[in-house]
Image (cartoon, rainbow over all chains, first blue to last red; front, side, top):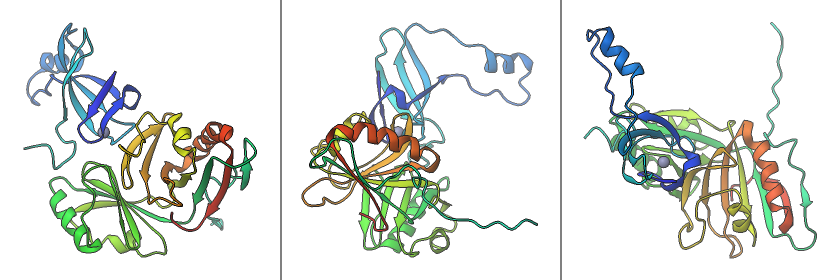
Length: 91
Length: 207
Ligand SMILES: [Zn+2]
């Protein structure tokens, strides 16, 4: 598997580290215990297209949001994660 | 308080043995460690990439690289190291962190890497064949021309790789590696280069 880093270009899997599901959003401070438990521990086990966080630690050290099909490994989109590459994100 | 005396020495001081190594005959690979350089990491503060670019332009008279490239100026090289960040490599104290701090005040954070990296120049007829064993990126001249740069990994070690100006019609690859990984990567490079024959040396001059 290869990932096309938006900053570096196409690179082998070994340069990247997998974090996991990019969907969960940190709940508000007063959201309650169940919401925090859900955010920290509960994950869907998706068979199909999934949004994931990957870290290009062996390259430009940027966090990426990768849209990947977990059944085929087909990657349909790669974009910098929020906060990565200050100029390119946050628009 | 105890008295310390610090002796500055290269991370490759022990591992590097000048001379020839591996196959006899004409060496296919030439390895030159460059010592005693100034290296400063410049990283834009959030939302300040434009200001950083302006400051770099004013200081160096040329735009800092915004894509994986190395840009030579008269007395330094700016090397892309990631989005909104680059390294300034120089000799002779002209672009030390003390010299650059006022230039980038408010726009970028600076970090002195002069003693944190080892710099290895790789050339010779078989340089690219040797690097192909260590790197998964395409270093063919059609793809990785003079001035191309990459933040990548070799032997599971993060490196900054860029192609300098040709020397005697041959490509010169420059490699920056973390000081504490330098010896390990050096031995891997020697293993990879041995079959081609290697000339080893060190220099005080940037390639
Ligand atoms: Zn990257």
